Length: 512
Image (cartoon, rainbow, N blue to C red; front, side, top):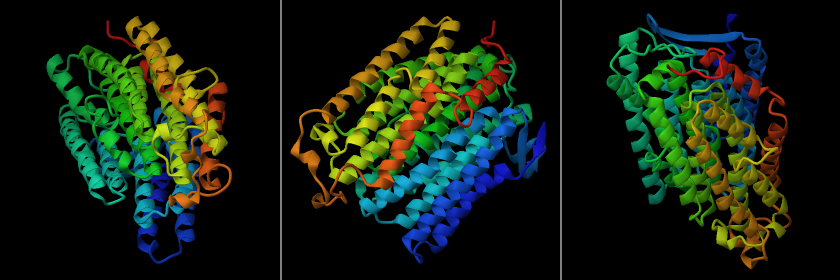
């Protein structure tokens, strides 16, 4: 049943209103009030999103018509299984990242906090807009809004390194975005619609396979860039100059997830599995993803900076999602969607741990963190749990999603990609478990630094509560979702629902 509703629009509008209020009054009000606006908006937005979950699980569709541009072309938001998985993750994690951000910016005495919190709110509004977009034109507007809103966060420190990273980020994302826009125009002119349709609306044979393949990659290049698929990943490690909560936003909540979600919409809702296979686009994506999974893991092993190691880990983990989408099986697509959830909670835990370590001790290099567990036992325990989850060990959310992707590869008769996924899991252990061993090794005097270091550290055990509580919550949720995938919001059910809609209810959808 299709129902007109304001809730999708209000979910986006709440975050935009918060950004406006912070910009208008942020420099005139006390920090406590600015932070209160952020937390209140995050709670309202999450409540609106979560309230739509029961409707989606019943098969109902909520639509907000914002503006009709022309016949077959409008700005419109709507709910479906795939979009709600992404929206629930982004909306829920905004609350935790907001609490963490408050602890981080206070502990590290960050400047430009008004712009920081305002840009953060616009990024989350954009992510929810992307998740709930009903068509390509609405999707593109929010996609580019996310690009522009992230830029001030990347250049937050305003030094030369930050400015260079910001320019690099814009060069990658804006150029690819314009190619995406040209492809959208072509699709609208040829097919008369931009509406997302489960299974796609582009018929195989409606144009030459070569032309369709070019169109396929013009539409997916924006997603490939934001998802950090090699060789289009260069902006992502450079963006690590931003504050750690921004890194968490980039790598776990909004930007990179928007990239893989873009690929999902294009492959499964515009081209459809049959046309994506017919033009060989999905096959090429599979190989790009497999290469990225392996190479990024090897590069991650060589990084001594903790955030840099986590950045290359993100590149590899996102390509799991790309591979799951490109395998075109209901199992792999469901696994890819659930890996958006699993990776979000696991990776944000790792980045929050990295930020807590930096603020508390001033340390950013792994080699200097020996014996850190004696100083920060809870943070190190959460880092350990999230590391095991990233590797896909049982009883963690990462196992559930990766098992589904492996099952999809098996059903599709792709044993090589099964080997790649298993090898990548072993490589994840080789670049994360050594970090854990250092944490629990013989104590290094550098790891016991407190507030005298000048990084806002604090005496006592572990990080400040505002940073510690969110990372504990995300780690616990990752474990719960590994044991009970449908706990809470039934995200696993919604992932399966979306995959079945895309593939017509079968386990395999492949052109014969």
